Amino acid sequence: MNQTELTESAIALLKQLISIESFSKEEDKTADAIQAWLAKYDIPTERDLNNIIAKNKYWDDSKPTLLLNSHHDTVKPNTAYTKDPFLPHIEDGKLFGLGSNDAGGPLVSLLATFVNYYNSEDLNHNILMVASAEEENAGENSLRGLLPKLPHIDVAIVGEPTLMQLAIAEKGLVVFDAVVKGTPSHAAHPNNDNSIYNTIKVLEWFKNYSFEKSSEALGDVKMTVTQINAGKQHNVVPAQVDLVVDVRVNDAYSNKEIADLLKKDAPCELKERSLRLNSSKIDKDHPLVQSGIALGRTTYGSPTLSDQAALSCQSLKLGPGDSTRSHSANEFIYVHEIEEGIDLYIKLLKGFLSINN
View 1 (cartoon, rainbow, N blue to C red):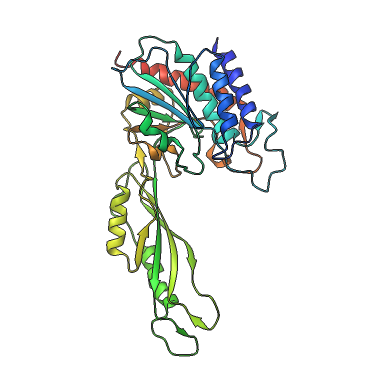
View 2 (view 1 turned 90 degrees about the vertical axis):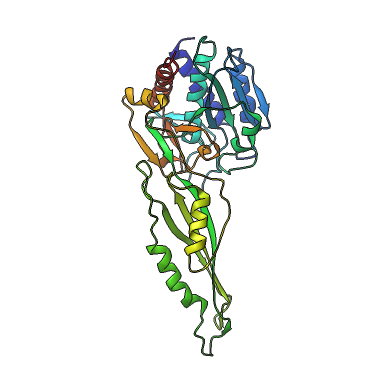
């Protein structure tokens, strides 16, 4: 099959995926569709719950492995939709539908690329294709839960909408619950230990705190107080004020380092919810990145999270579509973005897989 036919087939698959509800934890029907599509090319698959796994035909355990990964679950459509989110249709070159951009376009483009190389011999890497579930809700049956069951992975491409530019780093995330304490009392009585007033200096501390280490790709760590809650009624001074603090972590720190640092310095009680969403990166001189640069692609650091956070190997986030359209009403991807995405993925891997032969 030539590339044009393969591209047309991938777009047809995307239309089919859009037409099937596949909210996180409810992706069984899209998993069926992906398996059936790969079977058309005589490609055997493995299935773990709603995760679909395939290996290139000439897999060799002695070779390093390249993972191609994107997800087929979606968020639920928001109330601002004016189009049927499950009716795929093309208007003015835009393919509309829920999950078209995040991450259906990148997913079908990677699947087409995998099919393109499936029968290739003498590749310098194995190719492992994983169409994963539960990305949007960071669920236990997502790529993270699947990884212990997969072969060792040396490098990965995670398909997310990046306008086919090279996201060589991605910020991690730590969310903290903070507690500012005081002395509860009746509002009519004197109280020099009002938890709400005590919170003023705590908020100033969070606002003005800066982390020493910056990153070339990801810049500074960004810390933001995003929620505040206190009090039950007008005449009672509350015993405490609860805050939520969102910290976007660059690749100069581990999440544990951030947690240890803040818990030592913060003027209030702090408890992290999780440390598992670490930052990720790939060296700019990695052959995969250099192959993309040779194709005129630019590198940047991404502030948003993806399944990259689950990977311990070097990984590159790259895919057709624009992340600003993700989770928006009347989500769409341009058809030409998918066409160009498949072409660039194929050329990128041609350059990468031919290096060090």
